[in-house]
Image 1 (tube, helix red, strand yellow):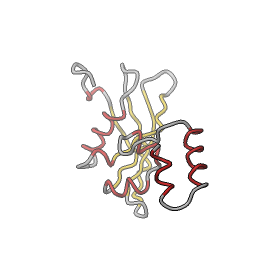
Image 2 (cartoon, rainbow, N blue to C red):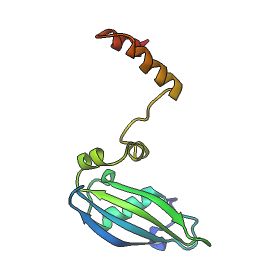
Image 3 (cartoon, rainbow, N blue to C red):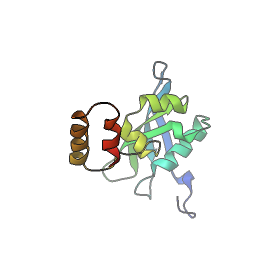
Image 4 (tube, helix red, strand yellow):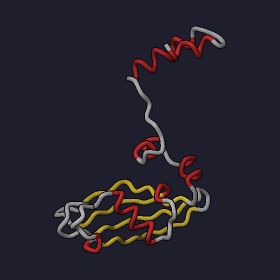
Length: 134
């Protein structure tokens, strides 16, 4: 948020709250009411939800799928709060971990990766390691 804008102008409500014990997380639909603002950043929402649900580590909060209602003023999305960071890393899809900065994205084009893979298939043993380096 910019220094002049106060978060109190934004209301965060949760509904369809579910405690998912199998995946060690709480999941919910988040309604954000934000009059006089185009939208609210996911980082700000994570801070608000951390306060609301007494979460110590904000990295365990994943907000996604936000859609702004026609005419603005209200957004609805989904939020997952994991019990631990390890649970999040084992359960969350890779692209969401990359968005959150918890994982690095793959480098090089798809064609490059495929060619390297196929070159590795043609050799055996320790020579495979040398192919990826060059």
